[in-house]
Length: 395
Image 1 (spheres, one colour):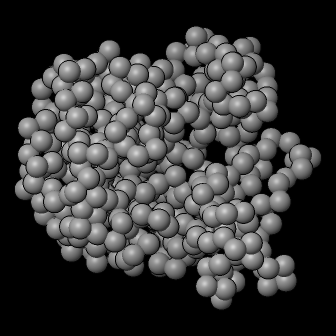
Image 2 (cartoon, rainbow, N blue to C red):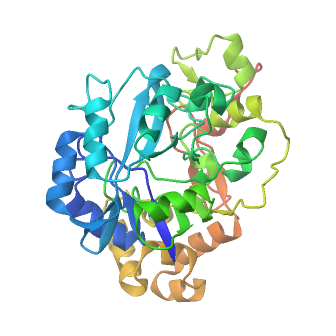
């Protein structure tokens, strides 16, 4: 069976997460999105594990169900060098035992625990319990594995199970790195709120024998990811090298010469685009035979927000979003499967936006420094100043 799965989210216990990140909210919103399987996130937090047990029915083999939505236990761990790792866990007993064993001072406070274990030590620990592990948002400049290492094996010593690309990278970028040719890529949302423009903003279409941890493990080991869906990398907030204060895009060479300081006094962060260019082996991607299609998309509410120039959570945007869901069932179907002609009957302006995404006829102002990129469907629109890349002539 083909399942849309998002393995990396956070609970209400994670720093900067919504208090509404609870199973009772995540389950129905995920169904409206079009997901069939969701990671719980934060599964080393004792309080969150209690809520999962209270809010779900155990379906067996690592699956916890609520409101016709299936969950698998997952967590993100911040290990040595502030590198983030994604762990997929077989069941509740193992999650609790690993939580007890993980050397961490904040695991009872923050859903994303911090530990001084290295990536290799963390891999060895969780592998004792049949868990799956890989780098979370592998290329991002703050907490991605490649910010500190030039090779995934320098981090883990052994081969991890997968690589999560993150919002600022895609298959076309990652497959310029030779050592990644043997890894399945995961695309997950890293959602901190249950809004459908956060949950499932990136997801995987995965072939499963049934909904179970055993089947998830087998599918990832056998590279049975059938499609990756995610943002155009330019829209990621760390795609380009940019100032974290004023968000100017800055030539990486100039940034280095100025010790990663912007002329405004802010700190410059190296972009994913440039970091991949530093470690890449090919000028063009070389996709292995098993590599599935990567489909670029954007959350429907954000598309509607751009078209109507209204905030994502306003009544206008949410009302138009709901009209489309009422008509066609799920957001993923609207974005990918429903015909443009049918969407046009409900909202002709949004149909043009979705068509532009499908045809890749978009104007994009790239993101960087912590600011998401922006899209435009009208080339005559004035683009913001942040589009200009600072060079020697204008630094």
